[in-house]
Image 1 (cartoon, rainbow, N blue to C red):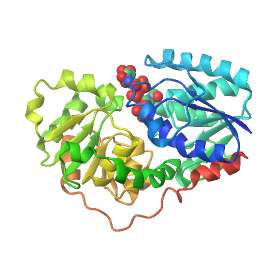
Image 2 (tube, rainbow, N blue to C red):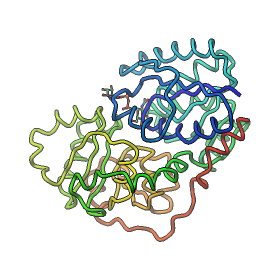
Image 3 (cartoon, protein in one colour):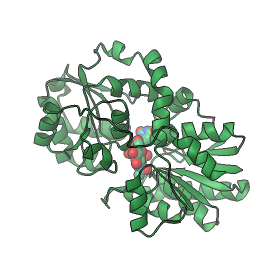
Image 4 (spheres, protein in one colour):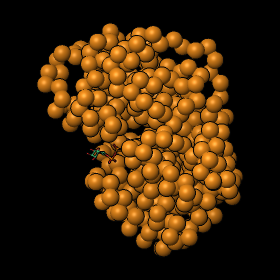
Length: 353
Ligand code: UD1
């Protein structure tokens, strides 16, 4: 079987790592396309190095730009490759512009689409990701859902054929790399911070970074929190913070803004944090698997299960809610397997076969 895989943004590298490994071990041919959506070494190459992801067959080097421009560049590049490579399946991950470009290119060429992380919905149509995932799901032939809830969302939209609940591939990754992260990550030492003595924060959603009131509210909450805060800053966010906050010294030495970190350091930061504050999708789940409570800086989430069982609290960009959620955060006793058994990648490979 020949598979053409499209990845391009940071979370897709993490998701593809376990699946790629299983597919190749089973003797399948994978043609790996990197769209170039993320290109800084700390946003891209470090994941390939740390997670042993094979070198892409091609990097389209599309880079950053407006949604339409960026998606169009990827679409043209992927279409050409699909015509040349004639794969049995195109394999797509998640909900980024790279995902949408892959699905649009393949569906018109009648190349079957397999979508990993199908059926997720935030029901917030202002998020670019919501459009990317809805459109991709409706073009897909095989839909690999992480949860019952995601399969139900598809059923509600009339999609029942080709739907498989396989669990979450990010859990494969967490299980596969936690030990290596414990051995190899030295970040906490170099930051001179002890385990369980800090909060981990990440902010990169346009709803937070591109809305001055929201970003200011989040930073005002950070200023009032007592704990150290380690904040690896996404490039989208860095410029916005610089414009917003004249005097970073007000936050020192409590708030540590650091460059984006690789997968091993991120696992270590999430595992050892008192609480994670984030607007990322993946990190909400990683926190859960690593038994760290999460406060989500959004008003809705695709990962509703973590909220329902008390490990995750939705606070939006509301300063008061952030402070209450962090200060009152209690760790629930139960941590059931809500995202499968950590073998989603193996199940996906079998179904593709
Ligand atoms: C993208 C995804 C988002 C995902 C996130 C993970 C879309 C619509 N969004 O958002 O779903 O959660 O990746 O990180 O696909 N930049 C750099 N260096 C890089 C990459 C980006 O400096 O290597 C800067 C550029 O200024 C760029 C901005 O970050 O304009 C945003 O990058 P982009 O890929 O458009 O979206 P993300 O915010 O990363």
